Amino acid sequence: KNEVEQSPQNLTAQEGEFITINCSYSVGISALHWLQQHPGGGIVSLFMLSSGKKKHGRLIATINIQEKHSSLHITASHPRDSAVYICAVSRGGAQKLVFGQGTRLTINP
Amino acid sequence: DAGITQSPRHKVTETGTPVTLRCHQTENHRYMYWYRQDPGHGLRLIHYSYGVKDTDKGEVSDGYSVSRSKTEDFLLTLESATSSQTSVYFCANGEDRSEAFFGQGTRLTVV
Image 1 (tube, helix red, strand yellow):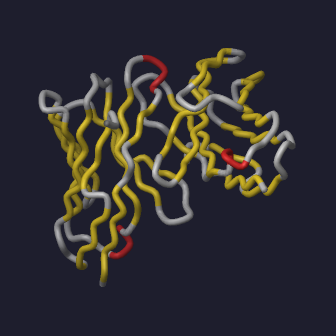
Image 2: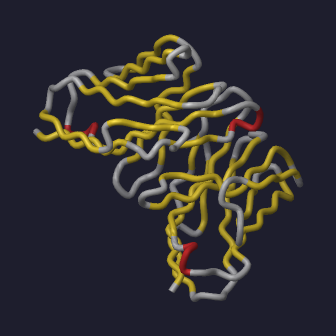
Image 3: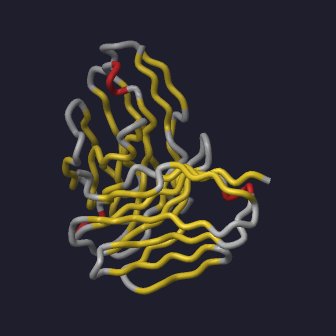
């Protein structure tokens, strides 16, 4: 079993829908990261959080440390949100990341 | 992108040849990392560095070596490339309790 599990693996939705991507982890962490990767592109950090909730534009990330679970929400989704979203956790020193498998999101116009 | 440049961006090489990938940062971030990304495996840590001349192995370090002689440069070397090392390689950097910043990736094909 992977240390970081994401669901769903693939998600297709219509423009404007509310999107939720889930991430569960099985180890103690110092922080959880949400990353975005467009096809053929680099990886961009969206959020790093160790408690509570963060919001940036239409993106919201939450984490429940007790339940070892995090969610990434996208409000009013748009085709440009189509990408792979990756959950990763860092543990202790050196901020080494352990990654989930990613969620491929497709938003149709 | 926090000033990370990877070179080359694409490379095709033959089995058995040595290959070096370069990661250059314009900041003085303490930590630098090399990851590989493969279908079905996601991203996995190869090696990382926590300072000049200070490096350590990651999850998939066999067949790879690294060097960091300057704060700004982190080199990944495949001593004798194999087809199983065909992958997309990402460099990243960061500090304690900071988000990670990634380069654009290097697509390596070993034929």
